[in-house]
Figure 1 (cartoon, rainbow, N blue to C red):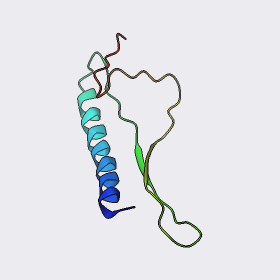
Figure 2 (figure 1 turned 90 degrees about the horizontal axis):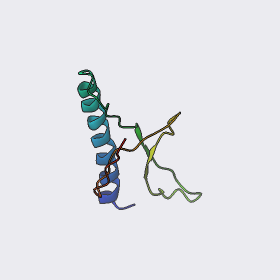
Figure 3 (figure 1 turned 180 degrees about the horizontal axis):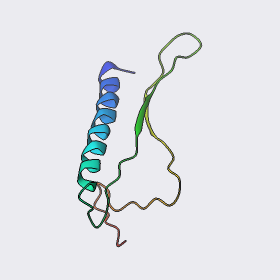
Figure 4 (figure 1 turned 30 degrees about the vertical axis):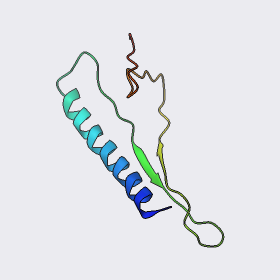
Length: 79
């Protein structure tokens, strides 16, 4: 992938890590709704010719019920 794309993926993973740390600090105050950010990973590989493959940001699968309370498109859950 282009260097700019690789760096964007790296920054996304770093940003999610910071957001996760901030959420943990917020949750120490026992809010009515806890904030959770799942852990993100940066994946890459090479093909048989040795060419680097596109990076991908992936989230681990969480166990149990997951409720999404909002998103960047304006969705807000009633839960």
